[in-house]
View (spheres, rainbow, N blue to C red):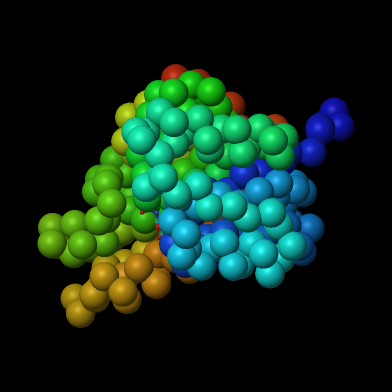
Length: 206
Ligand code: GAR
């Protein structure tokens, strides 16, 4: 394979950041051969920012509340990512919907992880919706981000059982275990140039 330039990841996270941590750990172990250029959060109290700082990664809050509208907020996100030379945007528990302004800027270069088996149960309350519906299997989905919500071409999925006595927390923990294995793996595939978007399909070179 031809030598590839190193990808610079910009990770966006709104919360505790365990997905981010799995990526930091995989980079440190050399399993993801990329650099994390910056971690951004829309929430000042996101623990993800602490995790980044502990790992020596630039971390910045771009507080949605400080911006008058989505466009200026997203322009600030783009400026911060550009400043660090980010080539791949990784959404890791980022709980805001990105508009076409952002998505077009990074077309084909934004990954998201969703805690359900898309196209079932999109949106911000996947575990709650899964339990309410009564399905027996759930899991996580990693996909390219397009201009819809949780609708972009799917790269990889992992399934877990839903148990009778599950709560959002117990199901969430079971799904997260899979997320922490699958997300670093998919990021490495991207970095190796193995992912090809063909319409709705993503081909992964073996
Ligand atoms: C993860 O389960 C991720 O799939 C989900 O948020 C959680 C973040 O956990 N993302 C979404 O729901 C996106 N709509 P973390 O803060 O511990 O990484």
